[in-house]
Image (cartoon, rainbow, N blue to C red; front, side, top):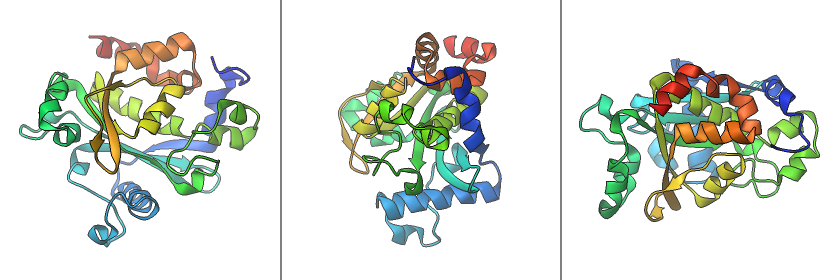
Length: 253
């Protein structure tokens, strides 16, 4: 358990400052695409701004994804966004991005996953405005837990900002019956997620995709059970999703 934090109060405290919003309207999707442009094209130059002259970063996988936004209540601005690319069996002939990114000799790893119930995390990002602490040039929540616990109110919650995005991922996986989730992430982000209780298994070697990235996968049942056993802050915040009997039964099937 994360010592020093009143764990029973964390979920309520977090929702006082941030609200998870499903981007399921044209206007909300536009907000997600604009935020992606800001982070992927301007802040980090992962994508070429000239290819997104309308100020919106989009790609071929958006039409089969479910998107979420993290709203900062006090300012009314969107702090982050994430999408979950739905299992590829819904459209024969289309594969998940991880299968396109892996080298040919490594694709067997991904092909062993259950295609009908494997989704992919993508465009997991937080705006620079909410990455203010030392070391957060690329990812939020990288400061030491001790520093965060010494803070109070909104500053303390800011130190766990990515929890809202992970709750969005879990809610989408629950709704669409995903049992496995894969991603292609920077090693630093993988370490961050482990620190907050999310353990992904590496698949093959590092690949060059927006810099060096590690393909990885996790079984949702394992993520749920580990967080429940350790009584993590992430468990406290996402308990309404993770404790759903229907969801736990579905991902354990």
